[in-house]
Image (cartoon, rainbow, N blue to C red; front, side):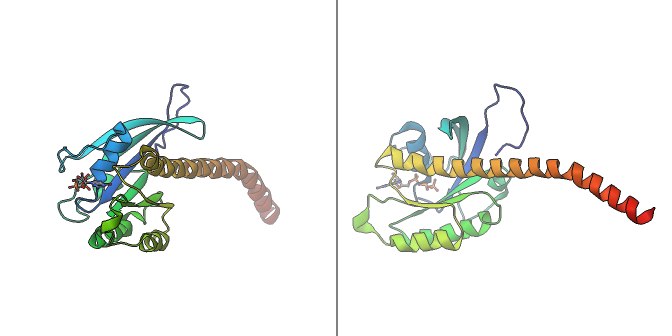
Length: 206
Ligand SMILES: Nc1nc2c(ncn2[C@@H]2O[C@H](COP(=O)(O)OP(=O)(O)OP(=O)(O)O)[C@@H](O)[C@H]2O)c(=O)[nH]1
């Protein structure tokens, strides 16, 4: 979440979401679906990019920026998203057991960031080819204290794919609001505490 303070009425909050996971789990397909409501199979799989979408969350308009990542080898050069993201979507394919193990390697990294993380089992339309039980995904999400867990398909309903991005952005906004409130409370408490502290010292040293 952008931490800059803006008094400008035209300021619009934003949330940077990085999508991570093993090669071929459907990260780009999910991003394309979220942005265009379409399932497209022809795109450059090695292309990394960031894309914007406007959403209304908690009656507030926000810009969700999505970074579609590509790692030739698992979890390389993670600084590029760790320095950028406010929230993470970690994806595996329900047809590929190894991709769940890869998602754990990503969860190991991002679970230390204090940012909301959602775990997603993609390709849910390929039920006949399922190799990862829903419970295994749920268990992994719980183990890494993910804010949410979904099974979706990039070629099925748009609404369930959109829900993935919206929920993680909402968690990020809520977290930011809690931090702002805590900060405000600290500022309110500190002046009186300073006065109390001063009077207390005067009492002792006079
Ligand atoms: N049936 C089905 N196929 C999918 C789904 N999502 C993606 N695919 C297919 O899986 C293949 C890989 O999808 P990508 O979106 O390129 O996967 P990726 O994770 O971005 O892969 P890299 O960019 O190479 O890391 C493509 O052939 C997609 O068409 C899905 O939900 N269901």
